Image 1 (tube, helix red, strand yellow):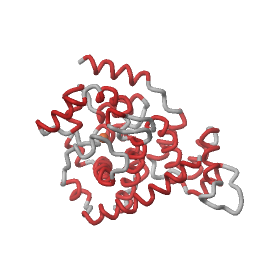
Image 2 (cartoon, rainbow, N blue to C red):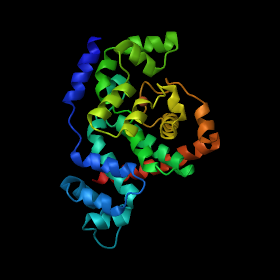
Image 3 (spheres, protein in one colour):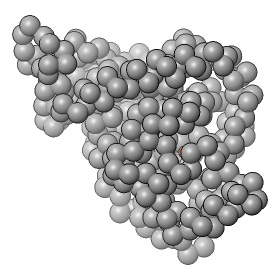
Length: 282
Ligand SMILES: [Fe+2]
């Protein structure tokens, strides 16, 4: 199919992620990471260092004295919050633009991704998962395929809508049928292109359960459920909104009740506004 070739060319043209990001992703994936591991990586990146210190010295924290180093910043915020901050800040450059094919104005895909990541971490915390940071990161990045597929969806939206309305396709299935590639598969291709780990690539590629055996995978199931929860809040979700399949067995598999889900939505939504406020400062 002609469009697949054009899409792959776009992947090759994509701006590489900063090298420091692969190191930060590795730290995020390792539950045994320490504060020194992250400090060692961040101190060599002046942009990340300065925005982190600026955030710590903002009125948001109202500290009695100024933070002057990465180590102090990590002591103040904690390891996970520093990793969140760096990931959210860095990937906003890729996901913060408008994606009109999906009906998303400037910043909406990014806000939606942040909201999903916070939902995912709350769900993982509820179940005392050891890989919470991995799940947060995978949730944040799962829709990365949309940054390229957007233009192709835009040119095919009538056909896509038609398949959803008349033939009961999900949005992902309609993308695959009309364009030849869906945003989850393309996200997997981008993840490989950026040398993400096979585990991260797998979750991104299957976050809509393209391969139904992913229902058995813990991290993919949490990311999938978090996306459903995020869609329910309406923060930054686009025209594809609720046009995805819902596999109720995920709730059972993860032992999450509907009450848990409601609590997650409430807590993560509250946390979302804090994170946004903090990031707007830097
Ligand atoms: Fe998606």
